[in-house]
Each structure stands twice: as C-alpha cells, then as structure tokens.
Image (tube, rainbow, N blue to C red):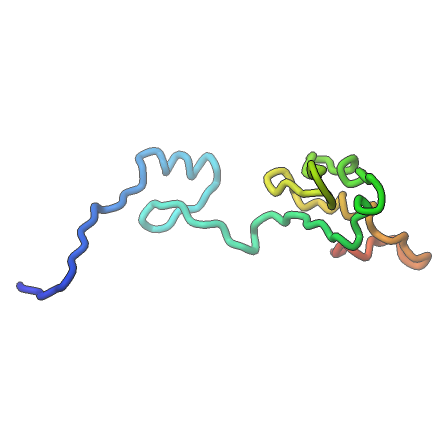
Length: 118
C-alpha cells in the first residue's frame, strides 16, 4: 500500500498508568472505555460564591461579616481594596456569606430572597 502525503506525524500510543484503576476506585472517579479519567460534568461541579459589588457593605465600612460567618474560611479580605474576595478552592457554595448581605425579610416570608429555596 502506498499513500502520498505532504506531512506525516507519528506519535506513541497513550496508555493510562498502571495504578489508575485503583485510584479511580478509591476516589470514585469515572473512566472512559480506554481507561483514562473522564472530565467532570459542568452541572455537577460545586457552586462558588461571587461577590455582588452593589450589596457588599465593605465599600461603605470595613465590614467583615461574610468573613466571620463563612464556615469554610473562603471569604478573604483583599490587601488593597474592596469588595471581599472569595477563594474558590475553599468555597463550598453554602450561601452563608450571602445571608447577612440580604435585605431583611418581609413579614409574610422568612426566606432569603437571594438564595434559591427547594
């Protein structure tokens, strides 16, 4: 068999490492049919909080409420400015930092309007 080509690229075959099956089982990470780890689904990723500049009280006063109420220590005051910064590696998306910045609830409802309720 003969094939005319202007460019030929050769590469070695990619193989998953020997311990990947055990690591997959321990960490409960799915793998594809060839044995490589699958990427996580975007809808299943954890939610990371975002700071709303209009509602952040830090620009009005040196407010550290969200830093005090965050159970994971994800609210970090920036060295030189406002608003508070969220460390995505530590944030679990629980919404605890959003509750103190919400307006007070109306008499008819005690639910936080900024958080989605089930």
